[in-house]
Image (cartoon, rainbow over all chains, first blue to last red; front, side, top):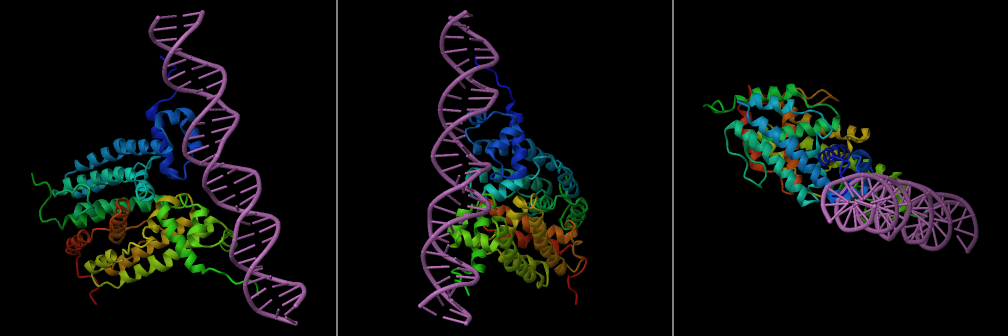
Length: 192
Length: 192
DNA sequence: CGGGTTTAAGAACGGTCGTTCTTGACTGAA
DNA sequence: TTCAGTCAAGAACGACCGTTCTTAAACCCG
């Protein structure tokens, strides 16, 4: 019973991801969200409780729909060059690109719940890199450690530079680096 | 002539750096600045023109007093391990730590003047890394390229993770990575 | 000591912030 | 067809936003 909803909740959350990724949390007003999502103000508060609730839902969706699948795809690479090639190719430049970066820099220091989501995303990337390298992943909950953490950090840094400059990350730099680094491995990764 | 100033301008800009670094641009109100700087509202607008003007001054100061000196110190390293050791040691955890990161993620995409300052800081870091490696620096104005850009990106990514998690960057990971990578160099850097 | 000039002090501006409230439209069930 | 329940529509709330204005205080100079 009751009047049916005139909007798709998942689509609204996706649109919110784009707005938050582009303008940040503080830089996105509820009016921006109401206009961009096509969802009425009252419905927004009914469904998500608050602006912060919608932000958390958007970040959660970004992790589930973008970051974690990307990490899973990275983990299927058979060598380092393949992994980094996929990492660069995964940069779709879509509206939510960089949401994780922005959340890490802007909201994670002030919002523990955001920090936990960010850590989840970053840990997944580290785990994928570690899987390809055949080494142990970083300890859960702890800071990035080891080569996998460093490589993940490098990809993060490249994407941050790309975001700041408004250009896609430089693929050739990543691939050249992969060639260099592959030589340092004591044995071919994934010998099986 | 005229009544003398009751505040030190450089100290005010430094305090502003801390606030902007901690809370971001949109997250820091003019009231926050007036309280945190101990500078009267009118004086703030007289000297800096606007909140954005103060932000640009604070970022400029952060570059001049923190980032560029750090980059210069990095460039004096004689090998990769020394450079990365210094890079980690340079993380003072002070109030303005991460200002460059936050500016890159939050304001650079929307404010070209911020983007130019951010690019200046990142380029200086790349140049320092390149100097130690004995390779050419990234092309000015362009995206990071080559090994130096990758290494700089890794340091950026590590610091971003540290900022998100509220912990200092993991020194041992960086140093372990330096040992691995040093083996890939075709010759000892800085042969002279 | 009395102008001239610069800053400090703080009230006040219109606008926008996140949030809530009131009213009417639409639904399935009685 | 009435009822109870959910959502849409939009006005309205107090609080805060960045900015400006007015007035008093502190200095140099003559």
